[in-house]
Image (cartoon, rainbow, N blue to C red; front, side, top):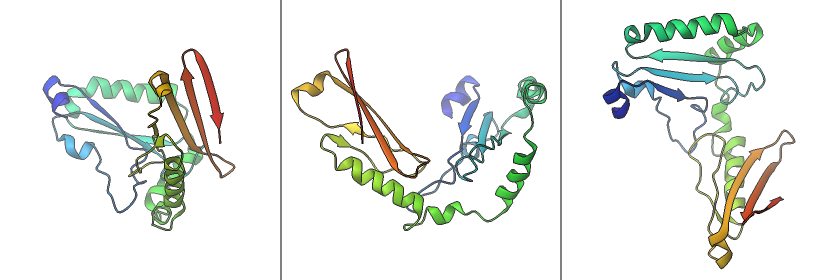
Length: 187
């Protein structure tokens, strides 16, 4: 925020996971910290916290010195009016989702499904020799890293992808590249 303030930059805040926080933690919206002198565009939508994937419905809030960004805001409105097609059923879902009971909270309790999935993925990854992972405080992702100390590890680059599939099972894919020979395995 200080850099944005110093150089008169605008901030873009993707807050799509704002309600998915674990273990009593809280999320602070970036716009609430920028003040009246930093322009902040905050994005959110239904797909994550409201679990309405596929509706493609979201929103944008602009805070800060709006008078200094009038041309920019006019451009956003023009783009929205000319190039985007309104998803009318999803617009009705937005009002209901924001004004109704927030069922995501039950899923984030210690016995909730999202917390259980996070904990299982975390413990499973950390049980793999050479892999470590910190527990997530929020969202739906874990970022494991390789902890291997073997001589091969100096030439090994690893990338990992963890996701919850539609089949309701955890999948993890590990891709290692040793030299120019990629090796991919999944479990």
